[in-house]
Image (tube, rainbow, N blue to C red; front, side, top):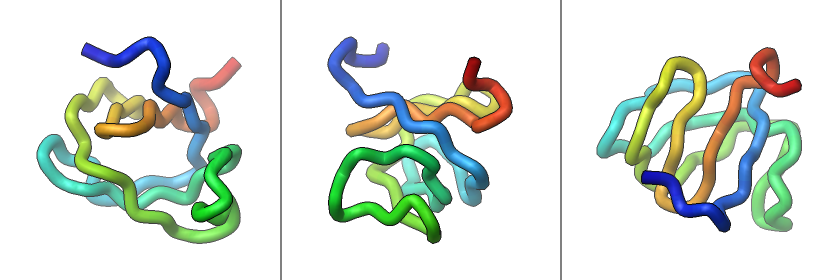
Length: 68
């Protein structure tokens, strides 16, 4: 179950999105100053995958095309 206070981040591309592993993403609007929105970033462990949306320990990632 996702936590209600998790940030939702749109992403352009993702690789290796598998439960129990870290994924690689190119985020579009990540708010952390430690994450670039212009290049690949490694996520925390993926805990749930639902199509092109996935949740990590810290964040919910939504594919750019799915975001209204």
